[in-house]
Image (tube, rainbow, N blue to C red):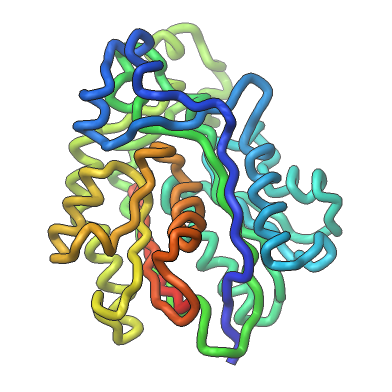
Length: 331
C-alpha cells in the first residue's frame, strides 16, 4: 500500500535577531514581562525587502538537498501562509518560478498556525492516490509585517517571529510515514485572532485613513479566548490521532506542537498528564512563527535526537479560524 513519508527537511529564519531588550522602548515592556508570559527570549524579524518567499526558498533548498531530489522531481508545491509577499499571487508560484521548476501545480493555503498540518493532509491525499510522487510542502510566515509595534500592541507584538520550514514528501511502501491526519475548524471564533484589512469588503471604499488609525490592518488577538480554546483543543486532537492508530502516549517519542506560547504548552502537558520532556519546545529562540513553527521544531527536534527512525511522533496545531489539526507519523 502506498504511503507518504518525509524524506527531507529544512528551515530558514532571518538573520536579524530581535531580543526582548530591543522591544523595551518600542513596546514599553521588559524582558521579565515577556519571559513570564511566553518564555520567549528572542525572535527573528525580516529586514526591508525580505519576505516569505525568500525564507521559503532557502528552507526548500535545504529540504530538497537532504532528500536528494532536484527541481525536476517535484510534482507539486503547497505553501501554508497568511503573509505572502503580495496580495496575490501566492508564495508557491514564486517558488516555482525562482527554482526554475516545470509547470507543476502550485498553490497557497491560508489556515494560519494550523496550515502546515493542513498542507500535510492535502499532500498525503495526492501521494496516496498516485497523482503525485514528490511534493514540496512549506510553512512560512512573516507576521512582523503586520504587528502593531507600539505599546498599544505589546500583548501580541512580543510573541511573533518570522520563519519558514519545508519538507519533501514522497511515496513509500514500507510501514513508515504519515499514519493519519485530523482537521477541524470553528468559524464563530474567527474574530478572536484575525487581521481585518485589506479585504474585499473594503474594495469600493478603499482603505481609508480612519481604518488605519483604528489599527484594523494590524494583527488582533483575544489572548484569553485563544488560550481557553487552545488548551482544550490540543489534547483533544492529539488523543484523536492516538486513538485512530491504536497508540498511547507511551508509544510516542515526541509530541511537536505549534509553538504558540509556552504557557499553552505547559497547560496541555499537564492536562494530558505527561512530562514536558515529551512535548518539544523551541519558542524561546524564535517566538511564534505561525505556519512555520511545526516544521522548524520538527527539524530541530530530529537534529537534537528527540526521535529517530522507527519512532512515532505526533504533530498538533491550533490557530486562527479557529482551526486545529494533528498528524500521527511513524519516522
